[in-house]
Amino acid sequence: MYLLYVDESGNPEGRDDRYFVLGGVAVFETQAYWINQEVDKLATQFFPSAEVEFHAQAIASRRDEPWNSLPTSRTNEILAGLCRILTAQKIVLFGIALEKATTAEPVARAFEELCNRFDLFLKRLYAQGEKQRGLIIFDKTRYETRLQTLLTKYRSGGTRFGGVKNFADVPLFTSSASTRLLQLADLVAYALFRRYERGDTRP
Picture (cartoon, rainbow, N blue to C red):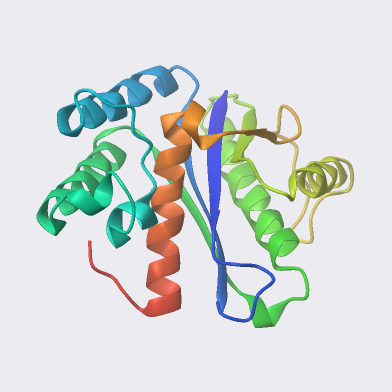
């Protein structure tokens, strides 16, 4: 089974942001443990005696502890370390950057796109002889019930792009503090939002 960890960036309801983003990292089920271990090692390298949760925007802005006591060069090292983990492991990245003016329901539309792309990824694996199901795992959000209802609808009736047949169940929701994979998904969502909202492509 492939697990797709997803986080969001941008306010889907406010007027301040032009874009709403979903960013995700997909891994084969046996990889999750080892990737969590790699991120834990990075955390221990910089904070040997403290538990720390990685949130890209908090690290980059350096407004709050423990980030505001670190120099910019150090926080850049941490972000670079997280990026190295993303590229060194067999992680598949997913991203939807939706211009909110194009739809009345940015959360639903972005989620529909994400479901379609994840299902296409699983279909390609199936065509190569690898029969896998997929499960989406979200950071806690107030849209939990809405997204679960949407995927139930997509599994029975399809999306506007066609049927989705490869999901094991409705999306699951948990705290990003409980898994490093959601913290990596946060990094992907943050980078995409920064690229589309601000035109910022710095690594």
